[in-house]
Image 1 (cartoon, rainbow, N blue to C red):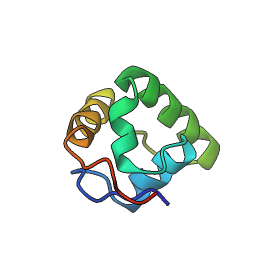
Image 2 (cartoon, rainbow, N blue to C red):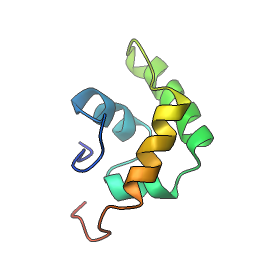
Image 3 (cartoon, rainbow, N blue to C red):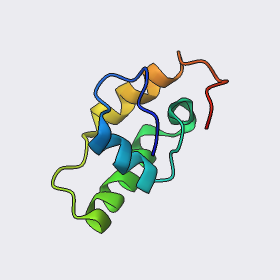
Image 4 (tube, helix red, strand yellow):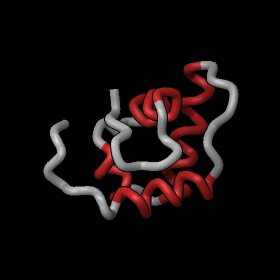
Amino acid sequence: MADPIGIAGIGTVQASRLEAAGIHIMPGLAHFNAANLHARLTEAQGEKSLRFPPSGGKVARWGKQATALPRDLPS
């Protein structure tokens, strides 16, 4: 499961969505275009029958926070 340490608004449900979208470590969020990641999360949301995908703005904030995370977190 993706490790949500250091990103506000990411708990177990959002971490599960990120995992389904191919994000396994939180610093990886910094490398994604927010619009593309939002589309992937929305797609993963449908596949996992989750009720609400995160908003595009929320995904963009996660990416911004991820840029401040250390890059040497274990995967």
